[in-house]
Image (cartoon, rainbow, N blue to C red; front, side, top):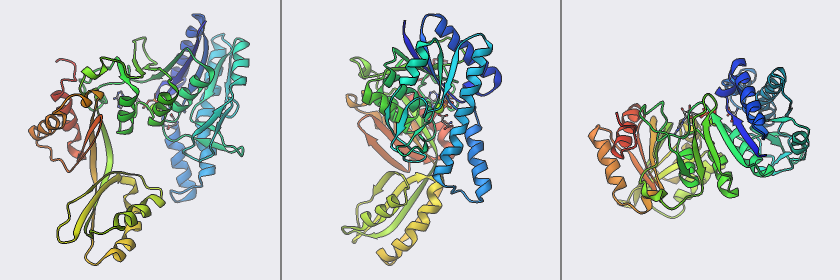
Length: 409
Ligand code: ADP
Ligand code: ASP
Ligand code: MG
């Protein structure tokens, strides 16, 4: 007998029929002689709707984080009850558990909590009684008893962490695509399903826009060695195995291409080229909790330099408010220019470590379709460019083609 952890995402539980489908799959897995723990997300669209409601009742986009977590956790709580009921109506045994009831304890950081520990005694007890155990994703209890959530896509983290805590034999992330593709199939139609991908590649893809997995869940899986499979909840096709790198994986230069939209770029011109200036600027931004992605500083001419950085477009107004007074202090003639409507395109692959010419091939592909590169950033296994959002689809397709990633026509 195996212990199987399955996670069903929002689209997979998006309607009563889909929940009945999930119930059937869980019962089928149990019927094959397995113990099943299922982690479920809020039904598709519910979390977004709850966020809108919060903004509507407060009249501004900053409801308190404590209450936000109480509110958002109800999305998953609805799904656990409905899934357990659907299993009952199909003649099976199931119990629903909130994150707290499942023994998930977090560090208490509202809306972005980390898992501190899991005591899965209740889970094991209910399994021993022949139940399928249905656990609410995306949530756990802070040390002081407050409800906390794990950030968008956080049910993936619940699934990986529970798989690790209960010592699962198999962890399956069931979603609305057949696995991890060489690019989001909604952007590049001839993208191919990847059979195996290393944690590092999955992490880079997830954190550069491939939101098929939440990046923190992949970090957790890597840290605790949880091998998992991403596959469809709507068919029986084998999915993508995510695991530690193996010999041979490096022979593929680029595993996949990621796209991150809704980015913005800020350029500060005429900044005095002296110690402490960059620190002033970026400390203020960090103190406000804004997350910066790529930073570029130009070579200084006549004691002045330019600094550009990117961030989420939704953070742009706040960045402007923070920087205006600081730039006035930093020096006369400092100009700030900001714009949204940009996107990041990344090519990811551990093969980059041992193959040269990746960047040049990527830039050539972009040039051939007339896409201008505004910024470049590289890491050991990623080459990323900032481009206009309006050209991101043709750019992704061109880079994908250049590395021969697609299904042959
Ligand atoms: P769930 O609700 O099951 O958590 P998500 O919407 O979070 O599902 O993730 C699945 C979606 O991720 C797919 O529908 C797809 O559009 C998108 N996606 C982005 N990049 C990729 C990729 N490289 N491979 C597969 N899907 C991707
Ligand atoms: N319901 C949460 C979200 O929409 C968590 C999840 O689906 O993983 O982000
Ligand atoms: Mg998801």
